[in-house]
Length: 315
Image 1: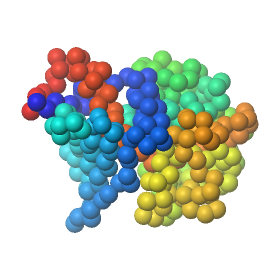
Image 2: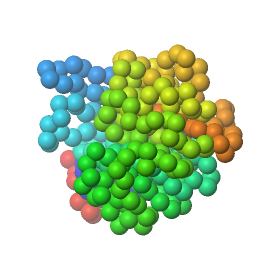
Image 3: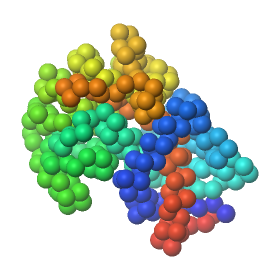
Image 4: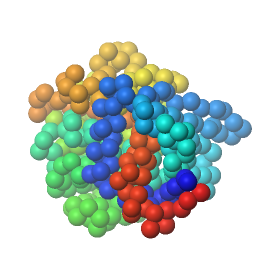
């Protein structure tokens, strides 16, 4: 029998601490070669693309995630988990919540590994789903004291701050400019849909850590080369995927490519992360392939007893 998991069950089962822990394990497994995570594949269709990412945790499971770029109102991601011993489909997740929490979890791992241990303030640029899960995960790895959020919509940034206060219990304020949001912040989250830079790297304080979640390819990017020049620690969750983008990720081309480190290698102690309190560190999130399936497997294993009575379905 196959379990069908919806956004409601994901939200009820996957808390931030468990999600960050799962993504930390996934990154370590990928670096060790146990999680096979090839670059994403896509097919151009009339008016959009279908995109597929796949992964295989050796001897345990394999699966994939698919989504489209048509931007239709009822579009949803699909994540499929197969048993590697039998080929059976163990679970299918439909919706956006699993993927969003996966991305947030990867960001939480990066903040835990790269931000200063005393980091407590976050400047957030963007007020959508991805911005939320970054802050949600950050609250699981650092005792946050304040969030400042800026986005193009005054109503959306005010609602975001309200949600942070209500759900995370962290003081949060909406601000009108990017400079106000990032000034003196210990951590900065870039989670916009902008294809041109929204951040002036000169506004960052020494010691700031930046999570970049939005566009970051060479031809469209929410941050500019000034941030890469400022970064003394430059990290991604998948160097292979960073170079496989068409065009490649901005940080994966010269003169930056030689400085780009693997977050899994940082976790394994194979390469250094932050070594001093005043270094500026930057995490360029690519969304390591297979991590949605990794997270679905964790949800089914650890949360099955919760998911099934709460409305999980059998197919």
